[in-house]
Amino acid sequence: MSINSLLTAASAAGQLLARSLILLGGIFLPLLASAEVPASISDPIVKQLKAARADLDYQVLSPAPLDGFYEVQVEGGPLLYVSADGNYFFDGSLYQVRPGQFINIRDLRLNAMRQEIFASRDTGDMIIFKPAGASKAIMNVFTDVDCGYCRKLHREVPQLNAMGIEVRYLAYPRAGIPSDSYSKIATAWCADNQQDVFTRTKNGENIPRALCTDNPVAEHFALGQKVGVTGTPAVILMDGTLIPGYQPAADFARILGLD
Image (tube, rainbow, N blue to C red; front, side):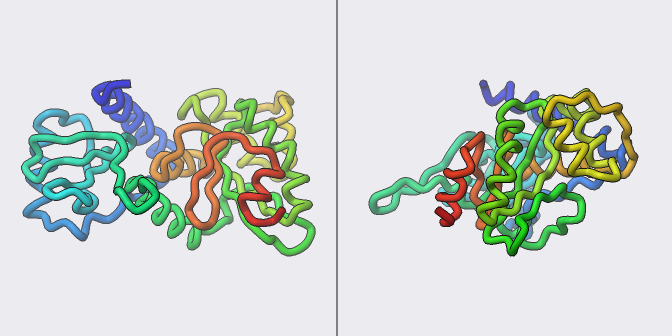
């Protein structure tokens, strides 16, 4: 997909998300703070980008590890590396060459951000499946009830719990908000017995839709976009590592050092 397509998609997604958050009373979590970059630098960069695409929102995050460039986040879209005068940018991954390895700079930034978020984030709005005893490890899972691999992963939650792994679910309806997938998953979060309705919906049972205005699905969806989720299931470990896609329970146990 071209950068123009990505930016156009970001604009549409951002507008849709904003409308959804207003309707649902949600709060869009802020992007990384731009305190490291003075306004004398960030303002001209944003002004130049706005001159080309005024429909998008930009935030200058920090100097890039590349002389003369800055990291700029498009709200709901890609991370850009923009020249100090705002006239040039490139998107995609920036790698640092180190002995024996190439380091993805964007992944380092996102890992640190994800670790900070989930270390302090309240769990009251998650649907959580805990082991019988003490939790030895935690998986934060962005999920969609209509996703086949999400359902496959959920069928293995008892196995994960038996190995001491706590599974914390956040909602990420891939079809967006509003959509039937959104209505299904929001119904689970609005239920008195969230675990039961969530599991029955995952198993394909047609649960009557019952939406509450204070459900956290829009906030979860915005958070997922912020931390780099592009599909489901997406598992974020407590060290900030993002594991996209399905993995068998035994593989997660090995990743978490529990095998």
